[in-house]
Image (tube, rainbow, N blue to C red):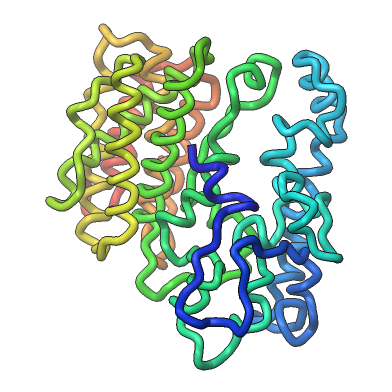
Amino acid sequence: MFLATWIAFAAVTLGAEPLASTNDSPKFLGATSCASSGCHGGGGQNQNQFHVWSLKDFHSQRPFATLTTARSKQIGDALGIKAPTTDSRCTSCHAPLALVPAARRGEAFKTSEGVSCESCHGPAENWLRSHTRPDWRHADRTAAGLRDLKSLYVRANTCVACHQTVDSPLLKAGHPELTFELDGQSASQPRHWREGTNASGAQAWLVGQVAALREMSWQLSRERDPDSRLAARWSALLWLLQRMDGLHSTLPKLSGISGEPAQGNFESAIKATDELARRAGEMDWTRDMSRAALRALVGTESTFRKTSTPALQQARQAERLVLALDRVVKEGKSKTPDKVEAKLDELFKQVQSLPDFDPAAFANALAEFSRALPGGN
C-alpha cells in the first residue's frame, strides 16, 4: 500500500526558503555522497554511519546479491522471471534504487547498493549540503526532503512494505514468509543512529505491528487468490492487536473488526490500523502503558486452552504472541531477569514447528512465563 509512497521516488515538499535552489524531482546521489571522512564516513560514534552500513548492515549489498542465488533463480523460473536482478517483482525490495528514473540518478548512483542511505532517508540532492547547518532545525531538514525517521509512524511506513509484503505468487513459488517487527528488527540491526531519550520499545513494537496489519489487509483486499497462510497470519495478528484495545482512551480500537478473512473486514482494517499507527506513534508513551500491554499479552492463556479452536489457528496466534512478549518484556534499559529469559526461550521453542504445535503445552508455558515476571502477573 505504501511502497510507492515511501521508497525512492517519493515526492518532496519544500519548506520556506531552506535552500538557495531546489527542485521537486531531486536526484539520488548514491551512498558515497555521505561517505567523506568529515561527514558519515569518519571515525567515532557520530560520524561512522557509512562504515556501519557498508561493513556490517545486511541492507548493504546483500539484498541485491540475494537475487543472484540459486534459490532466487528457482523462484524466478517458477514464475517465468528470466532475470531476478532486473525484474521489478524482485528489485522493488532487493534493489529499490532500480526504480529511480535515469534522469534522477547522480553520477555516483549505483542500483547494486541494495537498500542504501537514500532508500530510507530520501533523495539527497536538496538537503545533502545543508542538513548539517547549525541554524537548521529538524523541521527544516524534513521540509527539504530528509525523511523524518524520528517519527515511528514514518519509520514503520518506510520499512513495512518490503519487510512484510510478499505477493502470493512469490510465496507459492517458494519465497519465505516475512514478519515485520519494527522494534525487534531495529534492535538486531547494527545501529548507526541514536534514539531519543524517551524512546519506548513497546511503543515501536505496537506501531510496527499495526502497520504490518494494515499492509496485510491491503494485500489481501487486492489479491484474487491470496495465499491461505497470509489470511491465517492476518487473523492472528488482528487477534493479537485487539488485545491492545484500551491501552489509552485516545487510541482507536480494533475490536469491532471480525477476524474472518473477508473483503469488508480487510477494508475496515486498512482504515482503522492506519489511524491507530499514526496516533500510537505520536503519543507520549508511558511505562504504565507498557506494563498494561504486557498484562494483556500474558492474559491470553485461556485462548490456548480452548479445544474448539483449530490448533493451526492457535499456532499462528502463539507465533505472533511470542514475538510480542519478547519485545514488550524487554522494554527499558534494565536487563531481563534470567528466569524470564529462560521461560521466554521455552515459549519460542513451542512455536518453532507450527504443524506440531501443542496448545495445552503452550498455555502451560505461558502460565510459567507469567509467574516468572517480577511480582508475578
